[in-house]
Image 1 (cartoon, rainbow, N blue to C red):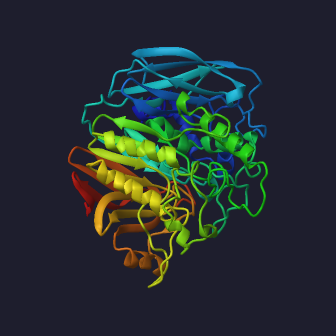
Image 2 (cartoon, rainbow, N blue to C red):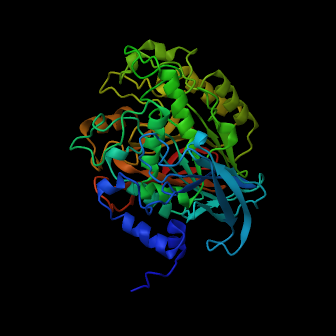
Image 3 (cartoon, rainbow, N blue to C red):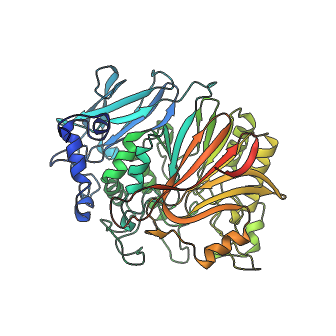
Length: 524
């Protein structure tokens, strides 16, 4: 039996000290009611929401934390007084902080929800680093991060991506397994948190946990909701394991919103733009984002490019903020011919120009679109009938065709689309004029929809019959682990058998390889 006070590399990453590791271990055994509350920090502790890093560059990365002594405080201020707190930070080459390379002080101001965003520069490329914060006599958990390779490098990359984590629908066990993969990079493709009040989005058999507070409409509501999610120990472990690159989908604001239009236009929501402003503000406060993403009123520029040497370029898209409203009354499936209107846009004109310009100028081996909704055409009607999802690229056919033309005209060597949103695993060959032109990997949810099932319904089997370009489909929870090399992209669909209780194991449900220069999925 090992000495419980011994500090292992894993325990340092998760807790900072042997005592911290023991505290975290104990936290994972807490009953659900306790996990809905203030997490695993001691009374008076201000680092209850953990730490995170994001958007790596060759010379630096963003470090994040947010002070909260009482995460579920109804005013959204996390139990912190209305004043600014100094927060010390340090970065080291080793997890014991014997080789500290940078340190400094940031200010956690109430105007930003007592969040801290430290944009590091001057670090060495393609290096692992460790970081921590100090404030009010407390020390944060230790996070692991890394810088990106130099622009010309072909450094291999392990990247995991996820989406759709509904707190009420289950435990975030998949996040912990994701952390245990030791990825170099994590992409989160949206629905990081959900806006509903308890009881508004109930799965068969009942929800596992409850949201605190009302449906989120104010800055205080969104801050409280983000804090509740950030209090989850499994999510904290995932954030501390690697740098994240995040984009939102709809539930960070309101289900199926489109630009300045809320979910149900027939039911007036006169304060929707104020709600949008509040949601964007809280999103920035709670994510490891750069100053370029500081919101300006109701706008926040989230589309951006993350480069991993010359191996991969990640074009992170925002398919909510600039889109035209959904056709067909946003009913699935739809046959509304308006979806074919080439003037309709999912990305907005400016973001589309930005993307197509990036594709033309890229010399990456792999060009990857990190985005939210299904890209490949998917017929969701049974039998000979046809019907499509108006909330996905199928509702914006002209937008999709222009991106595909961008792949072709830009001579993109290996176009790959990463997708979330649909709470199911899909693996799709993207086709145009009968040819496979790109690959789409769609991750299931972390919890949204509940446990799911390993077996397919007759309707789901019909999807595979009616869409032969779909190479894999499953209805279980989890994430996708990828490995990028010069010669291939490997994707492993990692799933857990349940989320309704803690401790689920993880397994690989399917694996695919995309060969360099040959679009299309090959079973691994």
